[in-house]
Length: 416
Ligand SMILES: [Zn+2]
Image (tube, rainbow, N blue to C red; front, top):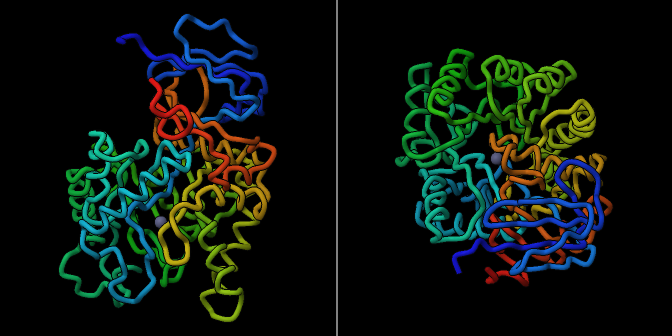
């Protein structure tokens, strides 16, 4: 059959990635696109596959915007730390994690850094159909200066293969380093701008000069790549905004002036506060200096995140899965954390995970919401996440995942 396959979802509780739930909706998919969204049952065409959702939720595929495909028990032992392990081993782990994140309902993922140019190879493998995975924005090695937080930890000293890091000093080296990462296929550059937020370095230490950061961002933008930065103090946030950074990771030290500037610039922010929360919990709270700084970061985030959300900041989900004690696969629990612990309304967290993620990717016109003309990246969920966000933390309630009009999981996979 050469005709374009059409699926008609009827009796859907539609969460479109932006507004409140619309029960009784009908959504039609033809080929890789959504072609219509109706508030009532629509007349089927001959040959349409009718899928009665019986009131289950239909929502956009989610976007994980801070994703480390290769991370596996990172930091579990002092040496080797993990990022410098054999590239083939790390690539196998990346295959597993990319397939897993897709099956968990994330039809897109944006890297927050990976060693050995493994990410660009994963993107090709997914595009070739060799492995299953999300739409993937591949990341670079961690780019920063000599002696920056990861470079100064003992396990990185004098590493022969600089698989994990790209050390640059001075604007010219930053420009060259960024161009080299892009040559190897990175589409988003990860820079370690400060210590803090789960690293061993102090948050107040900014690891690069304004001239270095500016050169790096200019070099990336010239070649169509984005730049994201691990940033944990307010001066560095301001400098990054001056230089035109695309994504701020963590954002500890955020104040109202930063919030206003970020909202104005439409810069994306990945707070990634679920990992520090889990780490603090697993350490039993209090005692060591490290746990006290974690608690301080958490308390600060509990204060600034709701204000930033209210102000309309482009907040996104994604975190350091694969770090020790924080396995890949628990992605849905992160959304529940932002609702139940931080106090963000469920509909807003759903928007972070869908529309905002697509906008971060620069693809807000074709991903992130359920609307005619958009790519058919859709989830069928048993329950209503806008009422009970916990349903997204239960894999048994994710009935089906569709990417580009094809079912990747669920009872209708294999249908075309
Ligand atoms: Zn990270």
